[in-house]
Length: 220
Image 1: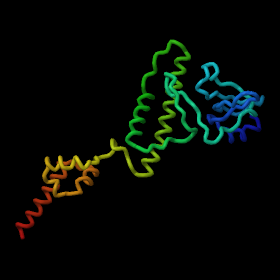
Image 2: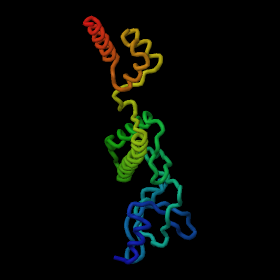
Image 3: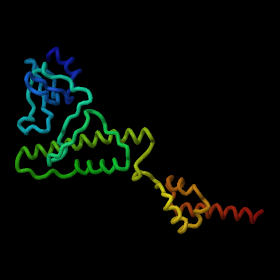
């Protein structure tokens, strides 16, 4: 094993992103696949989504031509078999601002990952379909990391996961008309609904309290 392997691996761990810079050629994003070999080369896979299948195969390049990815750079990756593209930051989990909308997007991504692979007549078509599924899985994991961080940090959850529901000011009068007992709760109707109480449960609670009060008055 070459003595240069540990320092190289510390700078460029396996599966990390780097830039391949050759003299007279534009810098090209690559994925590191291993440590330098005895001949001074390291195997990489080009990460440019615009390359053909043959150009995107792994290949040995001189270790001296591998450089760190600039801070704040982005990589364009193919996320769908129809060659739709999306630009995303390197190693930066998506931070959702609306948990309800983000949950919908996560469910769509999960369905894409679980969808059956299309029947391919050519090998390159099958490879592209596998790559698309792999990228969808990567995006799902990345976005869920941000989703989980926001939900955990604020102790919030999307409405689909909550036991209760948020009532609007327009819904309360309609519920009070159906369950007159709710009028006695005043502003507590919203709070109890958010805590998971259904309207009929709140109405039964009021009836029990009123019945208990009436029974106590008769005894006195």
